[in-house]
Amino acid sequence: MKTAIVTGATSGIGEATARALAGAGWQVIITGRRADRLEALAKDIGEAAHAAVFDIRDEAAMRAALAKLPEAFKGIDLLVNNAGLALGTAPAQKADLGQWRTMIDTNISALVAITHEVLPTLIECKGGIVNMASVAGTYPYTGGNVYGGTKAFVQQFSLNLRADLHGTGVRVSSIDPGMVETEFTLVRTGGDQAASDTLYGGATPMTADDIAQTVLWIATLPPHLNINRLELMPVSQSFAGFQVARG
Ligand code: NDP
Ligand code: 8X3
Image (cartoon, rainbow, N blue to C red; front, side, top):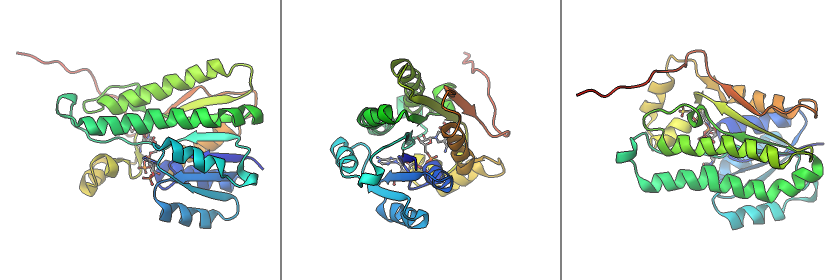
């Protein structure tokens, strides 16, 4: 039985990915800070799940959780680097530096640290990494500033990992979703349910399961195939143009 670790499995894309992988016969190590949610998910999935509660930014806690994995979960075949967040929608000149640091610590530093920790196992298992980037890493928009910057890092880190892991058999993919209805906007706006409802309302956004099925597809492709980067959007979302300041 193959084993995956899915970070940020307490909600949204991570939870759906853990469920999809488990449904396809994988064992899943699920992580996140909200213990109650992880325990409920682990209970739903059953014996194939192992819940590891830690803040992904706490490197010592991450290492300790991986060190004390039950024997059956130690051989990790797939790392899904999903935990992440956006905070704030203000333009750079009005943004909060603390929020910027939290995004960098979570979306970049923590992702890099857990990847570094799991790499030896992934190489041993000829496994794979799926990194959750975003369209925000490719297309700039007002208020995307550091969030978009962190996701551009994830895209490029994924490609560079591919280069470094050449010849090891380890696959690396980044997924760049557009709008997916999850708790993402609630988190970004500090709990503004109305803002979240307004953004997703009537737009038929992608679902967490749409992305989870994509992760599962990537993870179960024949071993000679690597999806380098995959961008997805709901049909209702597309591109806006440049802006011009006059006067
Ligand atoms: P959710 O807010 O629903 O899920 C985010 C997950 O990340 C939660 O499980 C949360 O767990 C975890 N997380 C956040 N901070 C930490 C932390 N410090 N330590 C541990 N876990 C943490 O959002 P999504 O499911 O939408 O987001 C998942 C990923 O997808 C993110 O990387 C996001 O940037 C990306 N993405 C989302 C898009 C969208 O439109 N929704 C589009 C493109 C990319 P907990 O709070 O319990 O710790
Ligand atoms: C989330 C997608 O467009 O809200 O990564 O930045 S977006």
